[in-house]
Image 1 (cartoon, one colour):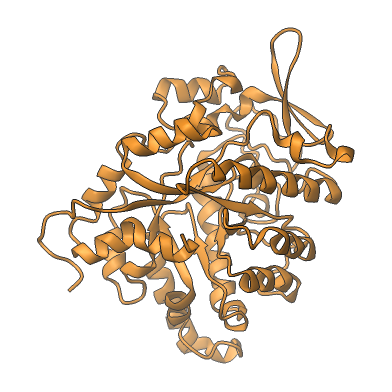
Image 2 (spheres, helix red, strand yellow):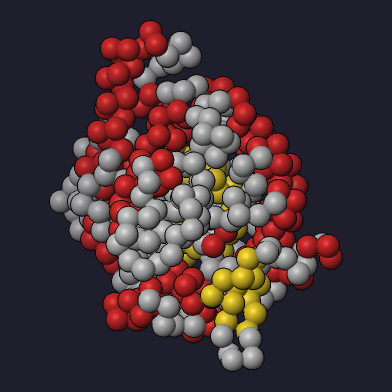
Length: 403
């Protein structure tokens, strides 16, 4: 039995499988080639004291980005941030500084954290290809130095030019052997001309990650800048606020509720289906992937549906030689929020199991419950056996990322 009436384990090793960096306002330019230095992401302050994010040819009011760093803020502060009433410089120091972040981790007894980007989850469609490559390189080089300051407690996830799989593969080969880099971030979007994720166009990306021994973390974003659910379902501009949206491929959206609520899981289910049932993970049996920040309660019914359709309509998928759930259990992980009621059910399901589950703080994003998240997780997983609790709290993340 997976569940038990025993008390929660008291010596859990908590490893955050999906934390975030808010890209620093200064410093990334120092890692860029001279030809790109004035176009690399940075913060500028004008004579009136107004802060501006400059990236390529874009100059954007910095206060629109402050919401992404309001984990631990009050509801009132988060609302003020969403309205643009907080300065970027007012974000908590742990967003991009090691010592304050480690202090926040200590309060929740988090041993280690794996860091995904924030603003760089989306910048690829707004800039020329050469700038995107230079930005990825500068960020990955900065990130390497950043996590090295943590004494092994922070680990970096590389960003790659996803819309060009060959260039993405080259960047993986460039940074993949660094001990500070433990994975690759990819959006769950059909970024290459709407081609599904099992199209051969993406194979250079899968091959490079597989050869480097780096897992791919599929991390969604609620914007319409890449092909996917938000763009395809026209969710970006619903007329629900006065935030201007220039066109259907703009990074901006006039709502967060619907784009996150619908866009994130639809993109993730689409990607999982093409990777598992579309032959990608069969062609690349050494590739490991993780599905992040979309909650996890949907995974059991989705795998059940996949297996059912494989039995009924398998003749239409010639490369599918085994049950999709078996492929998932071999090569995939699913991330949960700490308070999800379906976590124990998923751990007990033979379609998933406790050894395929990781969890995330999402720190310092606005939904991060800091402090208190590890206590919440411990309560959520308390019905499980002590061994399963230990797998979910930290051991699975260590296996996934090799840390």
